[in-house]
Image: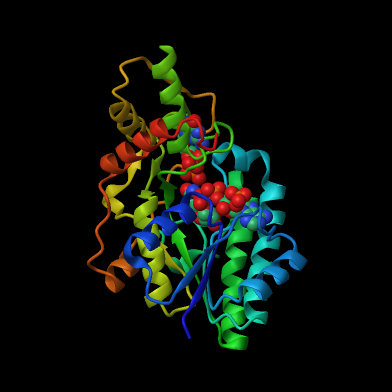
Length: 316
Ligand code: NAP
Ligand code: GDP
């Protein structure tokens, strides 16, 4: 029987990238892919989620749907991040189990790891200590996906697993200045600064370090994980440690992609968040040694070009 693959969060940054990767060659004969929007089903409702699974009858699920946001959105809404994401994750995994779905790949994040830790961080450290205060709600809800996966695997033999991406960016990102992550926010701000001849305002010191992954690279790795990864334990999907960059490097890449020649200011009254979350991709490299990531500057340029072309309709 051919697979019916449900992608929750199918309209978001990562979901759209998976859709493009699937439609440009990854789709196998007979497979049906269903990219879900919250408009079709509110996954925080158990009733709606049950109805969806009974209607779509998926055999595999990529579970992306979540309340997602950058540092400042998390700091202001920790309670909602916890409650909404706990509800969505519990409903999706329960309904997958109730409907006999044999494989689910859910999505954690490198920002859910312990704040006080040794580096590099690896997959064994998800539950080792409290996350950074700024996003405790999102982090604890994400960690519980791993707990659910262990339960469904141990008690019901399900292949429910998770991946741990680093900071993601690319076309179809959330460019909202309050809610967005740093790269889409910088792209939006730089667009406005160039258009209006005003300075580019960067938040914080620019010193924190981040690993960034281009959404299309993550999408290819997601599909590979669905097809090839058999463990319950999570798998980090990140660029190499030596490709970690500072926020100031990310600012420079955005400025270069726009050809912006105006003033760049750093507002150090704004939070820096966690200084770094350097993650090891050794496990991925062992399992999938041939994978090549898009160079950072090239990926930023593609993202900037997409935003400029789609300014009117982009999420902002
Ligand atoms: P996004 O662009 O904000 O998209 C979120 C998706 O979730 C949208 O498709 C949205 O649907 C859906 N959704 C939200 N609430 C829902 C609900 N109640 N019911 C059904 N669907 C709902 O997020 P993203 O950046 O693609 O993130 C995808 C996954 O990657 C998330 O699990 C996130 O935690 C993880 N992640 C993201 C990053 C990052 O830097 N962005 C880093 C690490 C991990 P609608 O648009 O139709 O409302
Ligand atoms: P994080 O990686 O989970 O911490 O989340 P973000 O993607 O929001 O990145 C936050 C880092 O980028 C912090 O060091 C912020 O100070 C810095 N930053 C600089 N300017 C901005 C901005 O306009 N928006 C956001 N979200 N972060 C910014």
